[in-house]
Image (cartoon, rainbow, N blue to C red):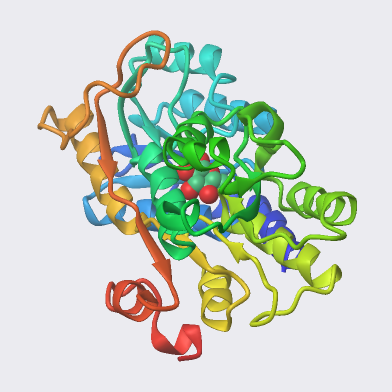
Length: 360
Ligand code: BGC
């Protein structure tokens, strides 16, 4: 699947120059928005790019959509090119949140406003607004799901305990620490009182973060954990921050002989990707966090309108997202936990995937 996506990614990359709307800003009289996305290796960003393009075009803008395939330098070059083409506004979902300081300073010198998309742009005063999900809320939603599913509140009195391992997000993505803090706000008390046992001892952000959200690394870590620490006692919970990690953990568990419906662990994820949602229905992933990328795109479009037309964007947070230079006015969309019990209502009912896509 990943390989296939990579081939598609390479093809799309090659065609980026061809399919982007050419000369929108000057020739057609339309204003052009440059949209820089991190990667096509995971489905959510493909959806984000498609939604942004569709909604911006519907609002009358030309769009230059670029993917940098998790290559930081490629993203810098893409932004430099968009600035050279004199786009009217930049929407950026960073690969490395701190690596774009210089290129964003160039955007500012050229009077091109910048909006941070999903991931905060750090250490820059060139960013006007930030559209995202409640990233700490994603972490608390994951942890509360575990707390409820395993009845952790009463576990101590009832003499129950569970083994758990953590697979957290990329250290260069500001969202990852927010998510981790949300997870620990709920679960730390259970690690402290012995209800949750992490046999590897890896509970800190530094010990659990996975660079560039790599599925392969998550799988490798999980394989090592299962063979090194869980030979005599099963892993009960894999607290992962991303559907990609859940796929890696799933593969590792299969390899170690775990069976769905018998001794399969509770596996969390994030994004409600199509494959993850199918896995949830099949029982090989327990839950995910649904983030409606259509909603995120619509909030981001109000920010583009604000910087280009002087209208008021929708802002609902002016305190949490300090990027080291300023507290960036933000709109936080609400994440929702999904599992096999509410997937029909939330995902199908919300029009995110059809029953046919999910094989229901
Ligand atoms: C996003 C998540 C996503 C992750 C990996 C994060 O910045 O907020 O939704 O799972 O990147 O792509």
